[in-house]
Length: 368
Image 1 (cartoon, rainbow, N blue to C red):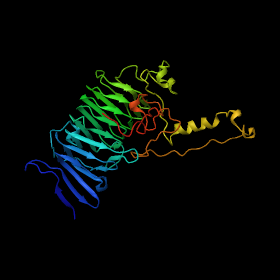
Image 2: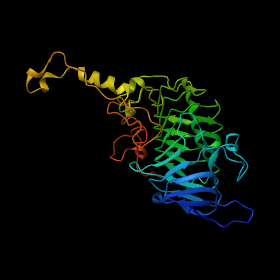
Image 3: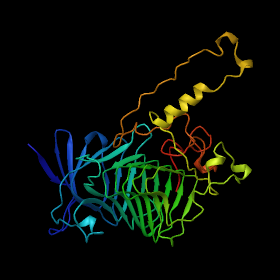
Image 4: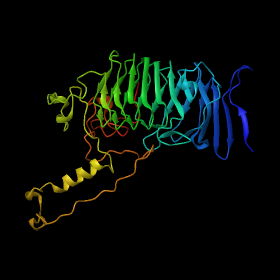
């Protein structure tokens, strides 16, 4: 039998955050108005209705937590005025206070819809609506199936090392949304990987690839910082209404910032080249080229093994594309994104090497 109880006492007429627990699941909806910590082992958490984190509240979601968004259109159970038209019909996690949604590289937080059909955007996403930037961070989290995985308005949160896939928009910055967007993978989204409107985000070391329309879509008015990202294979275009120098390849790279990718970078160090994921056709081609490279005879102990006739190509199994998961889209050793991110010390990899673009790069913990 399901057991329900109110987590937070509120005024009689107000909504409350409700948790129902049965068979290792917790159903969640309503209002959180104080410090609240979820536990991964008590999940998965099933979000059955809108979740609102009030101005003075903080929600902490620990590594390994699984969150499932219930399917179906919500029934006008608004906890606050809808953020936008999509929010009036789809479930959302709306943050007026703060949220600490921080997983680990080997133990990410996963937020996925109950139904995983491609382009079935069954929830609105996480909305940071004036969230307290001092305590708000989304990191090492995998989000899929949302109208916008993360929307940022009037706040300056840290959004890093996430995999945002199969959404309509990966990250949407609106009206003074000034997030720090570092080392994310944003792919297979429909409208745009990142969309910027009246906002000034900072974007470093992200991989924005294979989205159905635009990779980065700006409003031609916002002042953005966009450096050392990989933008490639976005079907309509990589950049829309952005700085015309974005993606314009140049060989004039400063010596201190030189890397193996000089021929495929723009003036801001952004790479316009296939990131080459494990199991992709690009990796298969790279392996074939690698095998065909002539070996330096001075490094071969026995020259009898040189010039072997009819050497077959090494084959690689192409993995089927998945919606989300900790093993999705891992960089191949042939990737141009490895050690090609911003060379600054704050972005260095855990081993001290230069930043690797995407969720695998950078530090485990980063100060704001």
